[in-house]
Figure 1 (cartoon, rainbow, N blue to C red):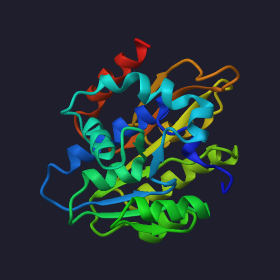
Figure 2: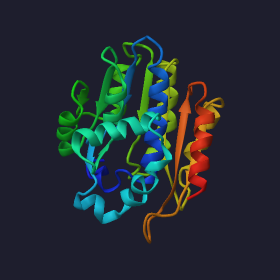
Figure 3: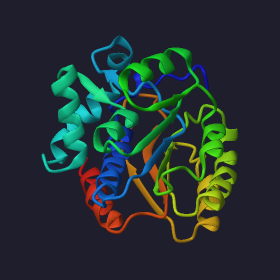
Figure 4: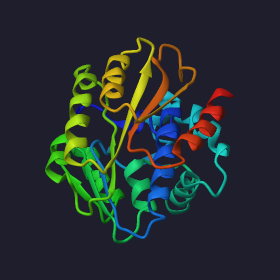
Amino acid sequence: MLSYQHLYHAGNLADVHKHSTLAWVLDYMTRKDKPLSYIETHGGRGLYDLTADEAVKTGEAEAGIGSVGDWFDEGHPYAAALNACRDEFGDNAYPGSPWIASHLLRGDDVLHVAELHPQEHAALKQAVAGAHIHGQDGFEMAYSLCPPTPRRGLMLVDPSYEVKAEYMDIPRHFAKLAKIWPVGVLMLWYPILTDMRHRGMLRALQTTFPEALTHEVRFAPARDGHRMVGSGMFIVNPPWGLDEALKDLGDAFEQL
């Protein structure tokens, strides 16, 4: 959606869940001396200032990375990305998923990121040097690229979910993309809202991909009236060891 801007939500608890998972997977995949492709369908601006009015207004970053940053020791790839981002842009900077991917990937890896919002697209081009930034629908980009070169790789799907139809469309997209790119790691982030509208989408995905990994965490709303009470990740072809890593992360969320 062209109205959505992630700056209001950057660094919240859902971002902690999503980005720490993404960083772990990228770190694991880059241990193998073979190039990979990274594809992201909804990139946002890639880099955020948590002192911006939009971020301060919602208080989500303060309740998120501002409160739980000590969960991750210096050896965790998410902490490494956070520290590198702050070293370069200041203590109030927060990296979006395209920036995290750009930091963790290597010179022979290939990054493709889509973003339709004109302002977000322009900011993304500045934030993530060396990436292929596409000003088109994310799924259109994904279909045009898959199977990508290099064939080994990862796709992150992280839509705004401002339109309820997205919940119905995603299982269809995942089924088609997995058929085109059967070796790709397909990662989906989804919000858990008070009305639990994600359940139909998740049932459809789990029926199509019975061996995929589902991981959910719950947390209190960031403010009165806020409807998001949790975060979910659905991962097709999950790397070995990810389930154990996410159990540890889930234990940390349970202590909130």
